[in-house]
Image 1 (cartoon, rainbow, N blue to C red):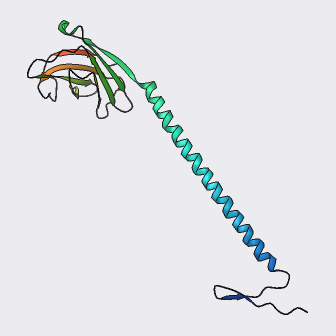
Image 2 (cartoon, rainbow, N blue to C red):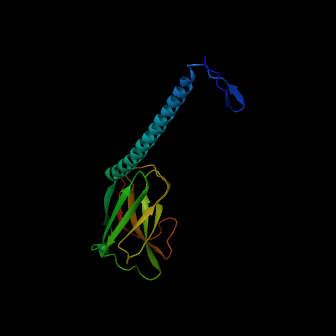
Image 3 (tube, helix red, strand yellow):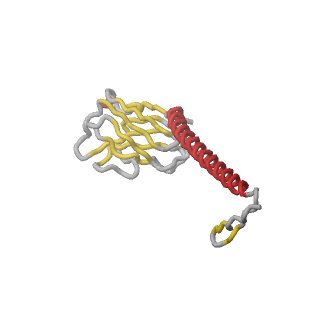
Length: 177
């Protein structure tokens, strides 16, 4: 008969292996390690899928923004500005746009050109800032408005601009209905 093997001590607890059953502990340990490795690979795979899906979502949002982009040419309301061209690219989802101008003369001394967003549901035109005659284009953004197709206007205001239009409207396009 074989001599008894010494007890195995794990964290202060003595375990005595029964003859012929010691292989079970090794097998359980190997299975647990295999499950842990599989779980780690699964987590890594899911993380990669989420990362790639996130970049796809961003790309889709950017392409959808282009679908809703509205290009509008403002009409000159004064014949003295007939050779000037003003175009607004408007993103109705982000409430921002870009104004591009060409051949806009330098404003008279003491005056600035000011861009206005025309929302029929707002109490007054919304200032989108000043326009520099020597700058071909610039971006602008405003707070949320209630219409997807606002109108735009450019007025001649005292230097520094105004909170509401007080000067002559030189260019305009009506809101979409």
